[in-house]
Length: 501
Picture 1 (cartoon, rainbow, N blue to C red):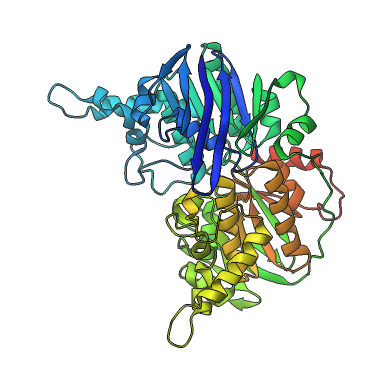
Picture 2 (cartoon, helix red, strand yellow):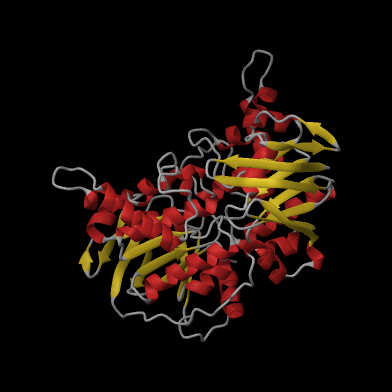
């Protein structure tokens, strides 16, 4: 078994782990839960040798092991799927999958056997059921596709201890269920799976035991079969979960965004949608269905071959995301915060105000630091971002707090139209509710218009008042009636599932 004993780890201004001890048995799927900043990812990085603990140690079968680097953990049959995307964009899918094992694919002359490498990668691509080729370059793929490739890489190692940090964060329910089948097979092979997730339904369906961390300490470990949802929430956030019906939106007849006949070679042929003032419009579909790709066409991150875009009744020409923001007050919260949403080495302050630098400049083009700090401070309070200070580098924050910063920078910009792609990826149950309330109030109280892309069916049905289902780069269904409460959750989920099938 894999065991951590009395692990303590401190960073400047915060004690991430405080005397943490947990035992992960062979042949079990062990969930690790807690709010953002509770210490889950830090503990995983200690087990994989990325961080060194200030106190305590890691043991395998009762023997203390030395972990000075990630390579050491690989030698001890430990593999990890990170919460953040960890790929080399310029390389092929196969290269990313076998990256830790390249030496095994060299012949006597030291040259790589590309055929064997690609054949090996294909085996694991088939396991995760992703429709890409081993020879495809990974850079242009979606975050969900990259996530599945990371999972394929972890499976290819044949490790005995597999750590997964939010592996389903960008996956739809169908893709997650396929992953669960794989994990149950690994369990049957007597391997250990450590499964970090904020989705309680996943934990209760998949896992054998669960350990909850709060503020860097172990709150408790329990068999999943003997603990309730409310027990888990109470352990994680120290209070009962409050689930409320958000109600209806005051959606105007005014069309603020009208995209007609959008086409792009190899993807879209003729896709159209309309967005009303004060509306939350949901886009749902499997990985690769075209949701994110269409959103990127709208904001100018990618170029369409055909199509007309009208914003507030006037023809819009968006060449890039700068045009979208400055000319049409349109923002885009990307699904991939690490590569596209944030400048990780920069401070929280710099990331929050990066969309309004022109506004903060005086006539001499000097940035008004005081005004920027005031606006960033207000957004930190509004988004409940946990950070030691405004000057803390955003790369040191937990994934959930990074996500809040990624959303907050567009709220500071005052966008009237906001496209939000996977708003609660890697966000705990308490923060998730808070982000939902912010999105809802943007539409309800401020009259903002929002296009919401989410792989979480509960989330999309809770927030969206109209849902478009994408499949194979087409809109195959439009689900209405949600704002009037005429359709139940079960009916909506069945309609979505039918459209996707």
